Length: 182
Picture 1 (tube, one colour):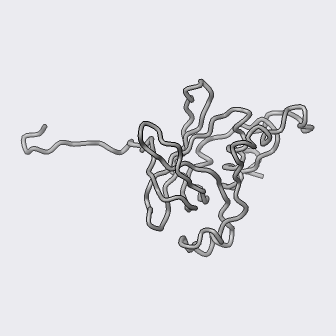
Picture 2 (spheres, helix red, strand yellow):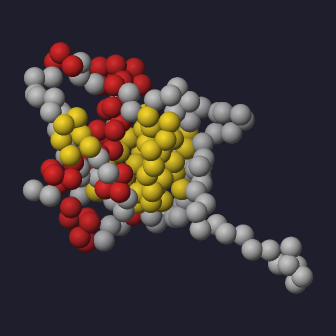
């Protein structure tokens, strides 16, 4: 501690790893950060850090985790479609920087209690309408401003990802940067 009783704390790289608890509902968010990590299961995972834009919970952080397994790809596709990225049925090379700075609407519900704490969990994604992006959205009327919500009930997870046998398209690798620069 300094002689004047002050201490310097550097929060410039701090990330809320748990996220806030907010009321269930739909929120306009900004993708503030994205990082690739590994789930406890050993599978690759993307951590998404959303910042709520406007309303009662303005500035609150919601954290979502997208595990990159065949059974959970429907969530990855739903997120990518909500931020306007193409999702061809091919192997993609994606820079996580393409996620940052994008706006979308997320459907939030309370999750199951864990260690005595209930946290808000993302249950679905929706694209922000183009007209709304240009006009400056009324954040209090989110239900009428979202395009189709991408939600899949838990029991439909197994059916959400087509099997490789049903995919008639080629499996060539595609760099997503090449698709978005066309």
